[in-house]
Image (cartoon, rainbow over all chains, first blue to last red; front, side):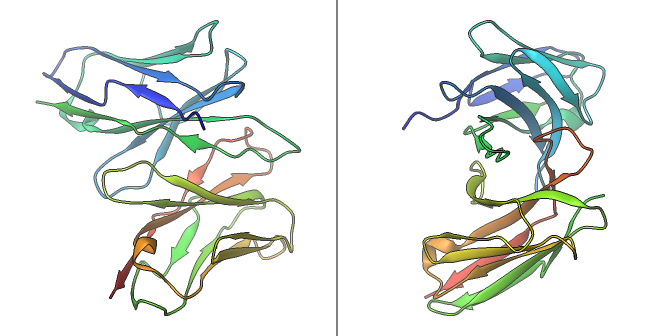
Length: 114
Length: 112
């Protein structure tokens, strides 16, 4: 079965640089979520899109932005990177059915900011 | 608002059982359970919607007490492959659909 695809899998950046993370949801899934997970932490919700429209915003810094494109893939853009942005970034997708919103996570992008 | 998971960690021998609890101070629409191995993505186990609902994934089952805003995950006859960190993710009534708030996780280690 097709899974969520994320690229790149690893990314190393310097402070103050920018980064773009990409997510390709499971086909026919209508919602995409972005989560950030620091070392030893639980995943923190950043932002979500339903049918290409932003549906909710969590603890996402103003330096970050995201969008979902017509082919349903999503990109998370991160600017003025800080050391504290080093984390695993997960994209998840879901297709709501009968109120059940099962979210399936991609393999993640490990971002290291030096 | 973050759900509270207990215990924080548990060590089992193969074949032993364990229970992981997740409780919230807010009314819950649903509870999602995930297992995550180190450096990997969280893997979806099950979702519980209605109070009293019980679900099963292989030898792992879960229940949801909507009135108490609690969910429990039951691991029966544990296997080595069950090792990992288990997270509950909660959707609240009045929150945006799908916006999961995760507990801090329960680290489960299964020894031979």
